[in-house]
Image 1 (spheres, rainbow, N blue to C red):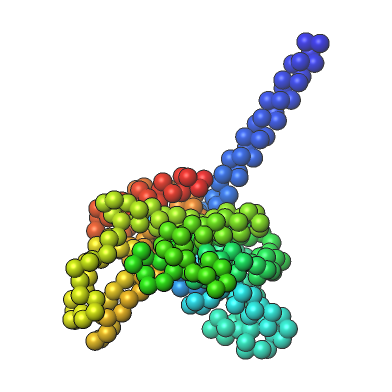
Image 2 (cartoon, rainbow, N blue to C red):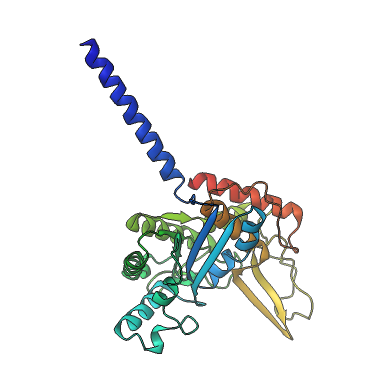
Length: 311
């Protein structure tokens, strides 16, 4: 009886070690093999361009090798990307299936053996979960067939700035009423997608929301500015905004509460870098020139904390 107990204990110890190693491998799903080299392919739009804008600089500072492939078209949804695939598969010579500077998605994917491939929804539709399907599933199946070794990752985009004139769609014919609602619904939609296709999330939207809600660093609309009759080159106070906001284009005051400015791009890049390379962002030194050191330090803390919660 004693011998059996010892054998059972040994078996349990081996099993425990096995599960411990399995958990470690799962936790480090983004860690790359080899000499810190990452081959990243992005299927997206201007929001993925924003979030990955400073990724090369971050990787370079940390001594990483980064190769990026892109299938990005401004304002494009999962449905639109999939429609291009269908056209290309139906007729390889159809220009309608080659929207990426004259190339199809299959052609671009075939240029490398990619380690990670990201997908995302068009921001305007990101809070409407029904808009993801069946296009996301079809796109994922197509990508996996062409690049079976690649890990699929979902990029969680962000909600528009609090003073936006309108927010994303949450259902057919229904719009989000606030920045908070857009974030909540888009977050739920992205997490449902990640669960259904069994992949991880790059939580850029969550990081943006942390900054938005921060008492010190959260953006606050300038109520004293004359928006009805602005005079160039005057602008409202947009301190700590992570979205572009107001800017002058010649004699016209333009408002873009959706896309990220350099601070927002930096925050997005920190999330992407930290998770894709499985490396800490706390001691990153690089920052965009027009982002103050104090704000950059705060953004690094937000990114590190957001990543730790995700992992």
